[in-house]
Length: 93
Image (cartoon, rainbow, N blue to C red; front, side, top):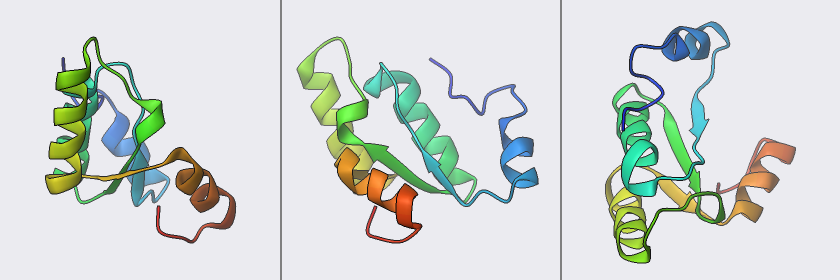
């Protein structure tokens, strides 16, 4: 599955709005979420994945990809931390 950066105006919109952090959610941790995280990091964005907001067809690829994401590409954190970050603009999320 391609990332949302693939052949879309997303990068231009993020630059226009001076975004520095991307928060990813989705229904395919091993597919589009992973691809988006790699592309996001490659473009210089801080990348956050709220762990309760992603899923996959099976647990093994889901959890192995979450592990890989946190080790290489993104901050995988509880959704409560993300909500706190969005509300206050600060925090560890």
